[in-house]
Amino acid sequence: MTTVDQHESPTRAAAAPPATDRYVVGITLLAAASSLVAGVWALFWPDSFAEAVRFPEHTHFLHDVGAFQIGIGLTLALAVVWRDPLAVVLTGFLVGNTIHAANHAVDLDLGGRDSDPWLLGLLSVVVAVALVRRLRQLHYVVGRVERSCDPRLAPFVEQKTALLTTFRRDGTPVATPLSVAVEGDRAYIRTYEKAGKTKRLRNDGHVELAPSTTRGTPTGAPIRAEARRLDAAGGRHAARLLSRKHPLLHGILVPALHRSGRAKTGHTVHFELTASP
Image 1 (cartoon, rainbow, N blue to C red):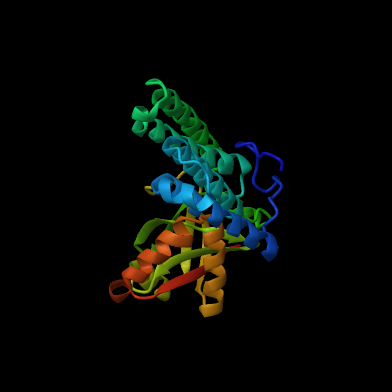
Image 2 (cartoon, rainbow, N blue to C red):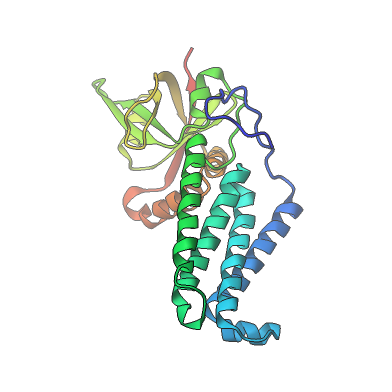
């Protein structure tokens, strides 16, 4: 896979092919699950694991087997949903090695050197720095994105957060930072039924969209767009695009928060944005 430089235009960069073969994905996830189960079992119940695999019991060795199995399992799982190989392997190694370092600290009475936890911990710190640098190059967007799009929407393809400006009846602008996914000549956003911006969009579909920081400070020029609320089928498509781009945030966390607060905030709704001429 070609590594995309952080300064390269997203419209010129080659997109990573999405994982569409269900057999390959299924087997990968099955391997990930088996590795994670074995790892947790060996790490927390080494006696039972040793008996099950008929292996001579050695607590520290089995603890380390658990650490490495968890690292392998996480790497396999992330490979399905993350687009960047470096981010995947760095994360898997970081988790496995950090557990490994903790094992050496906990198992000092079983052997090893006093310096082992510190050396392994230092390795985790060095790898964590490398991972953060890589995530910055990816603009903290680890999921899969579609780079072939309307040039006006190109700044939002790999943008983690965008600032959506909606307008009250009297024309007062209200800006809200949120996630956006782009496909072709459309961008997609998610909110909930009783949100203020949902009410404002019901009255006026004219919006502005600008790249921004997580806190909502604009980092680029805004574009004007028209927003249209999606029906159930369109909402499911928008949800898939958002979860592909942000596997943890919009694949797990945001849907969970929306479900837990549904009585107060209403159902999740999605909007399609089209850049204005």
